[in-house]
Image (cartoon, rainbow, N blue to C red; front, top):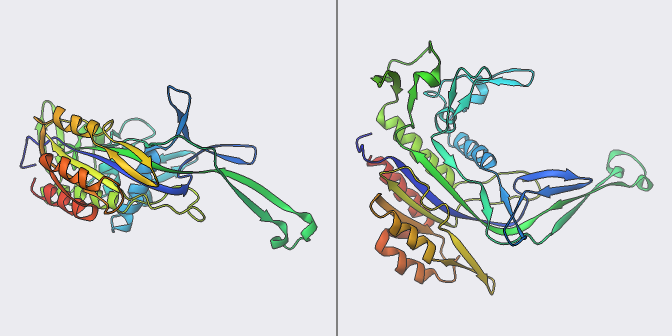
Length: 323
């Protein structure tokens, strides 16, 4: 891209789930178990996987009008062979692919973390029933009962986007004899390897679409009865000269009297630690969500623009356009 010093986009964000089980683990008897991780003190917090988040981002990109590679994949038994046309399919570009033979493989330039709950799991469950009466049987036949672990929590997430790899495909990723490579891709030979590069405008278009998809995020399991809005309530964005998940461990929140409070010390510490590598930083927060909203705005303003959430996504897209 034009600004060769820009290596990555680093994003940290907070997602609220009022009631749900976004990405379940396994089933114990008739109970659907929520995914959880155990903390050093023995308590556990819920999480949903990075794989689930990538699936949701794919779906939102499709909503935005992008074709996904699944329509062109070949399925044989349990094996799925991707089309390996990342110039055509945005999901192969952003999220990578792997040919079952292992000959063609692309590591995702978009790295995502799991969504980690900020507060301990409380053991809540939802009770569901299926009455056999609805299937033409007598009421006395009864029905099935099942339970689903659920939670109300705030989840932190992270995304690291490698700018020098989005829209750039190596011969190792495409195979020894890649076919049907469009003429509009630039061919570059470097360090004994061959790279095919999408036009700059298309690369920026895909990056902006990824940011928009994050702002529209929803999905997961059991959405028919536990629909959740997973769009961020807070986002920190930074364009970096290095590849590092700056905000991965920087977001902490407390809860008191029905309101969330963003703990600023670890976030400010991360901003200061990477000050020499941050080229442009901005923050977005949902109005009325945090009890210390004014404190957040005042303390983060020295490090970057602080604005409403929807404005922050738009501003991040403008920043990408400047590359």
